[in-house]
Amino acid sequence: MHVPLNDVFKKLEGLGFEDIRHNYILEKDNASLIADEFGFEVTINEDYKDDLFPDVENEKLLKERPPVVTIMGHVDHGKTTILDYLRKSSIVDQEFGGITQHIGAFSVITPISKKKITFLDTPGHAAFLKMRERGAIITDIVILVVAADDSVMPQTIEAIKHAKKSGVPIIVAINKCDKHGVKIEKVLSDLSAQDIDIEDYGGETQTVKISGKTGLNMDKLEEAVITLSEMSDFKAEPTGIRADGWVIESEMIKGMGNVATVLVRRGSVKAGDFLVAGHTYCKVRGMKDEHGKPIKIAGPSTPVQIWGWKDLPESGDQLIQASNEQTCKRVTENRITRQKEIQASRDIESINQKRQDEIEESKRLDKINDLKLAGLDASVFLGEDKTQVQAVNVKYMIKSDVFGSAEAIKESIDGLGNEEVKSTVISHGAGAPTESDLDIAATLDATIFCFNVKVPKLIAARADREGIKIKEHNIIYRLIEDVTEELQSHLKPRI
Ligand code: GDP
Image (cartoon, rainbow, N blue to C red):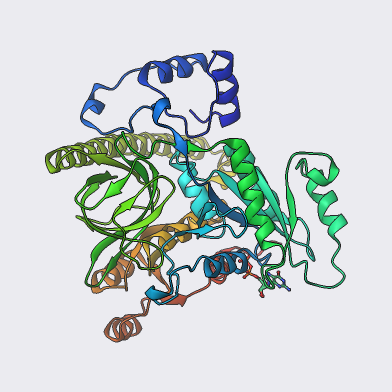
């Protein structure tokens, strides 16, 4: 509905709903009621009866669950450093190599209260935004990192905006407090100027002065998360309902096939279960945690790698347990058909639009001709059309190590530019560039970005021969800089 979540909360409260949370699941009747309140005309799509939906909340089965936390903040303020510190501190079982793999999320046990916290392992906003766009607010708490030596910066403000819009509470981590001469007072007043009601000024938002580098007060930061989650009373049904959750990342792994990292939200997933996510499904062949340790059962707020997928699901896809393989097949086939129908109707719309544009254009040309025939200067008439010059379209294809980062990159660069020049991502996916990628790049004059993947020698040689542009990157902001430079090079000099 494109309505801020807080407005929905207020409306629900006004209607007498109690104890509303951002992940509250509404039944058909209540959903209709609330949409109606916002002035939407509600139609119940009977097609959806062959789809899968999360079970309705069963209050009697609710149990406390660990909070799910995302770390956001300005570039270089220390998000990765903090995540690395937390990840290292999460190693409890040395048997499995002692290294925590990057699977998109991990859990820690807090040092003091011995409670569990789950962290999403993708620093930055792209993942958060992508999920939010799909209606998946999987984060319970945002840790907003602000470097004490730099204070509030543009991406800090952006993060605050996203968190507020999603109704997710913030804890502020003032980082780099190990440095000499840092001005914490300035950070506090800058935050307050952004409407963060910090506790230092009598508000409710906790602030913790930390160093991700030395570990200073990292335990306090974890306890702040626990305090906030106890206040917020995060709950889910661990058993007694069909499991559901979200796909965080997915990739093809040699010897394992299609693997997806999933964050279970409610219920429990175990080997042999059937799961549907997006356009694909899975009979769970096995599960591993972030330490590579096989696990048998994964309950609420647990991040887990699951293998056995027919195809790779996409990050942000909702995952729902199904009772058997037939249901999985039927639901995914329905979804694919429905998407094709939607696409077809969009195609028809765009063909119609194109036809309309052509008619308009021929009318315009006729008018110019008429003016010319009448011996009048058509340039005045043409002048008003100068702004409608077609933009230069710089095309990109993204190949990345994991699907999640390909998506994050697409989110960051697709549509950058202005009315003169803009970037378009024509495809994105996991894996090294292939012959057919080269064919497409050559036909459409696109640049292939390889992010954290090596270009096979044969492919590089052919690209070189045929003048197809392949660029390798392993730092997202460098890649973005590359795009903006390319776009700028297409701008006409301003006089
Ligand atoms: P990100 O872009 O937010 O993920 O930031 P990084 O974690 O990559 O950190 C950027 C730089 O700041 C790196 O050089 C880190 O070593 C440094 N850094 C991060 N945290 C701290 C800290 O607590 N103290 C100090 N002195 N440096 C830090």
